[in-house]
Image (cartoon, rainbow, N blue to C red; front, side, top):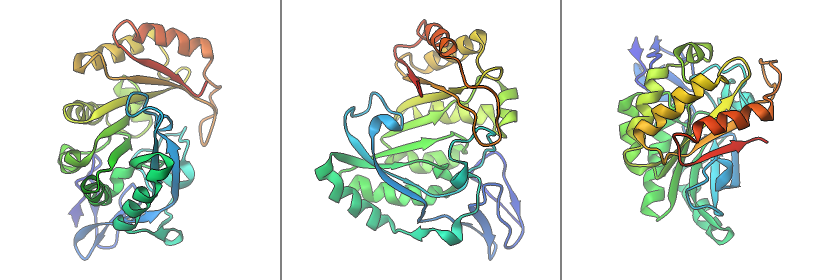
Length: 272
């Protein structure tokens, strides 16, 4: 039996067994990334779609996704790839091929590579290897993550990451229990990342779950304790996957933005 080091779940895996994320496994008593290089999605996106508002605005980034996730959000917007085991149905693309494609797309305004769509750190080894090559080629690197990863994993990739958008899903342990996460691990991830990378945060606002003004005040105060200049994206929720709660009223987002702006320099509304 071996223990996966990626996140707080610390999956104890017998020979051949997969972890909760479905993208890592015990193979010959070694922890391996089953999703390494297997790409489910690739697109040239505006940088604002990540979302990153204050990192090379107006540019584009080659966005790649694989499969797997270490959370179980009932409202997952990419559940087709994050909650499924797609390893046998995807094409393999080497780190060099991805970097070569990113360089080719410079003529279209591309500045680099974004790891996104599912949880990229399920295959942090791939993120590390691609990012190393990308940095040596003069490309920018972007990580879009739920922030559910150990400091050990984070510190291995951090020297090669220029910018991140990290999900701060709520401001309470009870909310993180609902999505199968760990509030303290995510907060530590954010604090460490902000020391060396450009960091922006996203909170998907769900009625009755994380939409109280008091919780938003707590969240904004905590972010400001790191830096008041960390941008916060408040994103509108719509029913999807296994969550049938009614969509977030625009008025709710606007009120939450007013609260957050008391403490933060940059607050943006998304999906409106």
